[in-house]
Amino acid sequence: MSLAALLVLADGRFPAGGHAHSGGAEAACKAGRIHDAATLEDFCRGRLHTAGLTAAALAAAAALGLDPAVLDAAADARTPSPALRTAARRLGRQLLRAAWATWRDPGLERLAAAFPRGAHQPVVLGVTARAAGLGPLDAAHVAAYESVGGPATATVRLLGLDPFEASGVLARLAPELDAVAARAAEAGRRALLDGPEALPAASSPLLEIAAEVHAGWPVRLFAS
Amino acid sequence: MHLDHAVAHTHRYTHSAEPLRADGTRRALRIGLGGPVGSGKTATVAALCRALRTDLSMAVVTNDIYTREDAEFLLREAVLPPERITAVETGACPHTAIRDDISANLEAVEELEEAFREHAPLDLILVESGGDNLTATFSRGLVDAQIFVIDVAGGDDIPRKGGPGVTTADLLIVNKTDLAPHVGSDLGRMARDAAEQRGELPVAFQSLRGPEGVAPVADWVRARIAAWTVR
Image 1 (cartoon, rainbow over the protein chains, first blue to last red):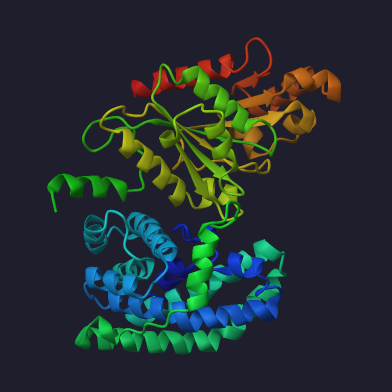
Image 2 (spheres, rainbow over the protein chains, first blue to last red):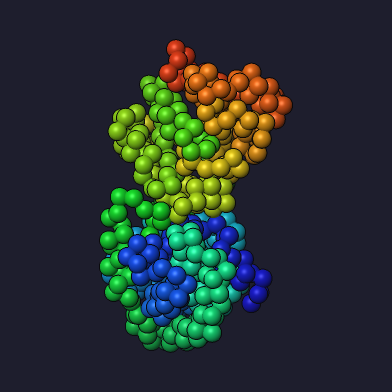
């Protein structure tokens, strides 16, 4: 693997559309569940161990070469909220555009042909990692990091939270991020042998419900 | 999977904005409109739609700060049918969505092109940025030309201050010239400062309430379309 390629893919400036999504942070801020660094950390920890773990395992499995169609169906089954499924597919489509323009890999082209409306973002992320010469653990790390990095950045914009505090939250979560990524990569390897049932299905009911409510707001800053 | 589908997808997932598509047809000209809050971007877009919609097949993409305000204004004013107006959500950063990470806007543009491709291929897509600061410019990967809209009430020193929008936009509109006497803005000074910052690039002094209205800007757009179709 190339450590530098990993940095390119994980960089928040990689133009794949993520900046318009808060990962549920906008709904949580409005509801008062996130109001400072400590509550942001609680939110991120919850998201990391639920949606983050599930996304990381899907990404790891895709990076290992599991059939993206099987994984996309597995992602659907693990995402009860229609609004979140739509957001995940849109982000997948945007990531695929950026990835194809960046790495020009035939695997990415096949994925684009098979999913004209977009595949779930973690699946595209895994295929992209593979195209960039990265492994399943790398893909899992990126997915896990995105699951908390997005809400942290969004909270800085939504609440005017001190950006140094937001970075501190992410740094404190780093050991847990490593552990989640390792567990996800292991689940991806098991899925290679036992099928998608081996992937974790750790959804968070409150994230799913809040996403549905958020999608109905007439005025909002983030797309999800 | 049909072959024609595969070709369409290949096109979609390339980032290039070549004038001609793989099948030889020409895509629409894309013009971005940026500028500070309240300078009259949406009003200019609405006026352009009214002036050009009988001659051109047009669509509009808006990038609202609070998602749908500008799109809803255009819909209320009925300047175009609803299927020709798309709102892109920008996560509180309209300048990111038009410059640093243009993926959502490219999708919106391509979806509009695709929707009208068979029956009324689009000639022109206007991409309106949400109100932002003087440094907000469009990526060349998203638009072919850009218009920067400022107004006389925002202070007659804005052209002198420059910045990427004022300095590099393909057309600078100084809007609401009818207000100049009321806010003490010196139009002559604005014109001199703009010329100094912009060299040969054009400046349009506009009052949508005056007799000319949007006509000079509409003429500029028509000239861009004419140049585009012979490329």
